[in-house]
Length: 376
Image 1 (tube, rainbow, N blue to C red):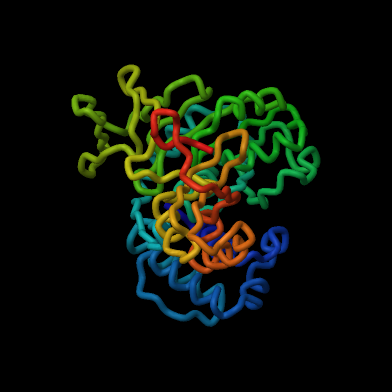
Image 2 (image 1 turned 90 degrees about the vertical axis):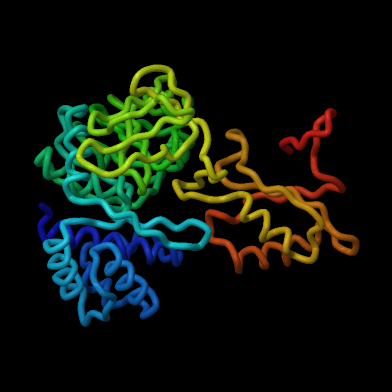
């Protein structure tokens, strides 16, 4: 069972995340005096935080006179419901995925069994996601170690922050930025990664930089944790609390403790019993900074601008970056000099993760010699 301090961490991460999404200074939002920070919040962010807290903990939305009142109310609701809802935003629609405390506890116990020598958990991931909740709220109870949150800034002095026995909880975008800084981890650091698949060169780079042990968790806010691996060349091993039906063209999974059969979040290759290689999402979504993004949706919005005759949007190649890119065929009367108005149009309709990082112009969409669409 969670305690009031756990609920306080979740609420704090909730409004810090809202501050960050409104482009507030990343370091400032990690100051210790959360009550004072709450009192300084713009009314819009307070209202959004109050509405999301109501969804997360399962009570009717209301206005709170103080952060302490909000925490007390959320804690009372948690004690009554014994469940947490994790929020995901897809196609500008927020969806709540409810998980019972028991479900999250069984996941964390199995992950804890694969760890050893952990004396402290340092998380770069907020506890309002299923992944962050498991590692910053439940796992510290199971391992009986302290947990702290840090802003994901690759260039800060990690030698001064980390010590042997630390478990650093992060995500691929951070690891890639960190590796570009050509820094090294102190001895005795273990790393866990999730939210998107880590590339082989990223994992190997972490080991070359001094990581003692690496674990990657596969799952989603919808399903929770599904499996884990220690190398990019390995398949994910499905956790023991899942039943697996591999007789279908696409495997189905079901919690042994309940729930109905469900599809995996991705198309997968099945190299052996209870082993999977995720290949691609069923619905065409891609991960940008750990966030689900739909290139087809971005493409439809871009195509609605009067300057655009035709267009394509896709994820960058690894050597190009980790954002979306766009190819545009312009209508007559428009040229590349009109990119500014197109960018402004998109910025009013897309979030920061959906916004293409680069734009390429051409007279026709790129195709191969055989006439099939290709990359650019």
